[in-house]
Image 1 (cartoon, rainbow, N blue to C red):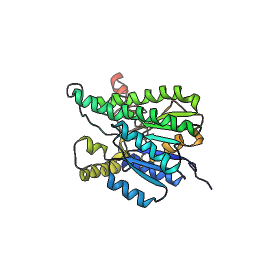
Image 2 (cartoon, rainbow, N blue to C red):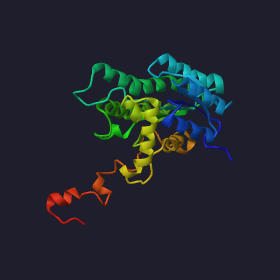
Image 3 (tube, rainbow, N blue to C red):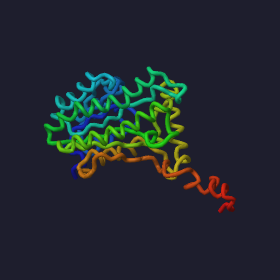
Image 4 (cartoon, helix red, strand yellow):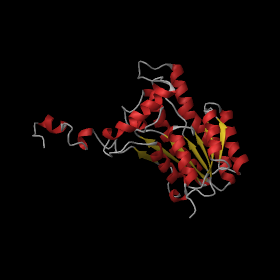
Length: 280
């Protein structure tokens, strides 16, 4: 039985770890050929060996336009074209709120999280047009939907990614190119440690703790894992979502459905207490 991405060529940024790596594995299992774009050259070389003939690695700093262009060209040169782009690379360059922000940190955040996917869309569109269309998926965040899920600059940038996806979807629909965003919730990756300036080893340990304890933070009693986002990206990348564009998909175990007392019977029933009603 053919995979859901059989015959498709995908570029995934931030592909050597976390959500990117989880998506690489999902896409390859479904028949895609993949260009893994990342800064982690050693891990990239290992992926090329592990998936010889089906994966090519491209060194890519997504804040450099030339690197984005080269990664997309790698898809054409190695596998004949481009059908799917997953703009996933990200980090938290600036931690803190209004008083802690700096102009340099703000600019670095937007260069990485907003300008990079915008440039990816810009340079991918002509290549996809050559193939009769394609699908672009952008990693946003629940931090772009509600306050309290991330630092200020990161949250505002992720909100911009959602609107970028919507606007690009409208513009590119006539070219049969769909653009959508995914809003992950609490996913067990190294981004939390990276945001704190921790070493890679410590960041991996923090990710393991998130995987161990994440189920306690949300209605769905399982930890959010990279492959959960990878499967959402698979749906948006494949032809099953041919009628979906300009959308943002929340993949968060229900963490944003409402305040904790709306789904956790053990949480204080705040409204009832304010009204003086007895707790159930």
